[in-house]
Amino acid sequence: MKLCVIEGDGIGQEVVPAAVCVLRQLFPELDIVPANAGWRTFEATGEALPEETVRIAKEAQAVLFGACSSPSYPIEGYSSPIVKLRRLMETYANLRPTRYLPVPTARAGVDLVVVRENTEDLYIGDEQTDDAGDTGTATKRITRSATELIAHKAFQLAQSEGRRKVTIVHKGNVLPQTDGLFRRVAYEVSQEYDDIETDELLVDTAAYWLVKEPTRFDIILTPNLYGDILSDMAAAWGGGLGLAPALNLSEKVAIAEPVHGSAPDIAGQRVANPTAAILSAAMLVRHHWKRPEIADRIDRAVYEALSEGEHTADILAGSGVSTEDFTDIICEKLG
Ligand code: NAI
Ligand code: MG
Image (cartoon, rainbow, N blue to C red):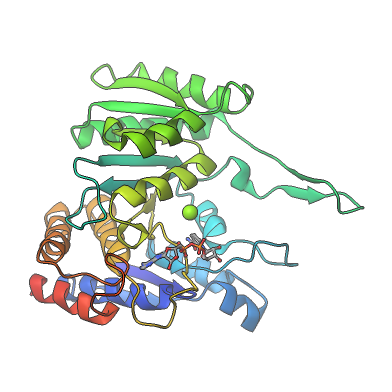
């Protein structure tokens, strides 16, 4: 088994080694191949996602990715490496679960998954600015084929996890040609899954209910941009971004990647919470390597550590152990 490991920028360099430590303990034979991507790589080489990294990732078919710092203004030759890698690896689905974890910041009873389309929408990165620099235009692309793929994934996940409902989230009232297509195709696919209830919400209303009553959600099926935003919102109910895992996947490849970014505000301080990265690795073990019993062990070790009051400083400001100490506690439990 091979794993391409891309730490990236900021706390990616702190939380990814923690997840690698857990995986090494459970899979001593694992062939780990490091690769570069991100802002630092761009500054050093002029490329944010070098071809060599893509080659290693494709060969391994499994990637553990930290986070990359992407500036919020145009830089010649730079685009978000993770968005590009997801597209090049054809990981059409991004699964972002939020489950209650035993920390004071989490909400009891929350157990939902944002199933985010991962290859199109505004994230195709087709943007232009006019000559005067006063008008920016971006293309939003939604296709039947990509929507069918992600919708089947959502309903199949509902079946395999014993979930009852899929909520299609869109803005079809304003964007009937794009989000309206997503909605229509998602409903068509739902016809093949009689055992799962289907409903829908406009994305603004979904945001409202996600804040007010998160326990009403089960699976949220949504295009790329809304999935990005709603999964950060949902993460707050799971205890915070430091605890929120994600997995990009297709039938052949997977990229495990926490929901959070490179967190420059805390990078280098050894306080980053490695839980999101560790739980993302567990998702890779479960869905890609098909070893649910080992994924369960990782999930259990994290749950136990947190319920015993062990945590990093993001959970309770001003108190908590370091990234390395929390990782050691998890590894000891997996002993
Ligand atoms: P962020 O997720 O990096 O941080 C948001 C807040 O949550 C910060 O206060 C941070 O300290 C905290 N936080 C995040 N993860 C944490 C962890 N593991 N432990 C403790 N606290 C944690 O989002 P932000 O600040 O909006 O973005 C920072 C950079 O990350 C940007 O350059 C952005 O482009 C990039 N980014 C990259 C992503 C990726 O590569 N997949 C995803 C999201 C953002
Ligand atoms: Mg995001």
